[in-house]
Length: 376
Image (cartoon, rainbow, N blue to C red; front, side, top):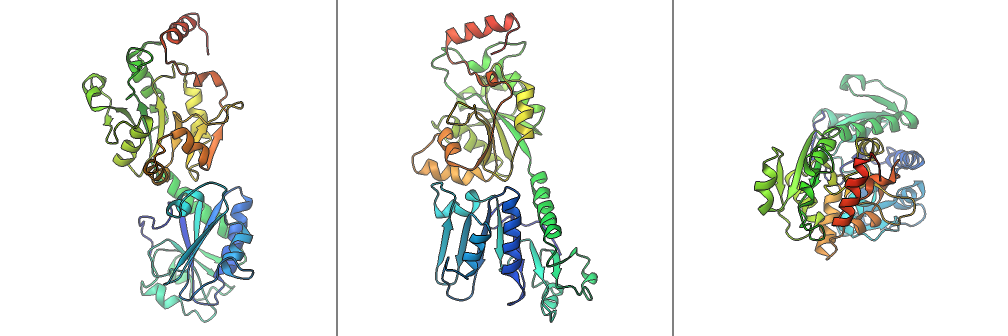
């Protein structure tokens, strides 16, 4: 009864379906409250067959907001409305996918979204499940009577078992997370104008920065690619590393990331610039261990710095739409994207690992320090 379909509204989405009066809103508001208490920022979407009023006391959208939904979307055949309380500037196009960690959908039982089905007292929903009119059913939620339900071979939950249902939903989302590949991307496409020579080819260690950074990422990423310009392919290709040449031109690091996301939109990308000679395996592991795939990115941020470090960051698949939207609006800064998005900010154990080397004097000082066994 369950097949993995492409997400329709959000990478982490689940619907609560049932006939009118089965208790969908009550169950969802309790789940929203539970997930908000667990530290998430959930969203809520309801598609109704009738004209609606939004955010009025007693209405479903109002109850969802009261329960903890940070983004509420409601629609009928005539109109739709979105309320977002994230305090971040976002458009309607990305309000659902970017502004909330996961999306709880009320209704839309005909769509192939993964769903919990609330079984009504008359069991009138069961023939629809049995005949395939309601598909991608994850579990059945009942009012206490389990007769006729065991034959479906699905997990069964009492509607008041909120810990059990929320644990099941969280496990479903965790399975999605585990299915997302984590790829590495060495950013080496810069022109190194301040350095005067290609920073990727510099040797602070036994290997040059291109090879060394790729090796660090290989410790946690299933695949590692080098981001470069077309004219750099011959030079970097000698190192037997797969290349992704820029298809978004003259955008700096954003162009490299968007080109990688275009190639593999299903993947999360651990981006690391090639000019961090002090970067080490401990720092890489710290970021991976603290990763929150429900947010747009996981990034290092120094305690005394207002902005996260954009060039040693894990960007989740959901970040792509927002990055494209910001690029279309003329903002190509990864740093400003991180500052304006819901991310997991991580303090590095050794802040010196984020010391990037851009000039000749800095390079000479770093090489001298490393020869003495020093750290940044």
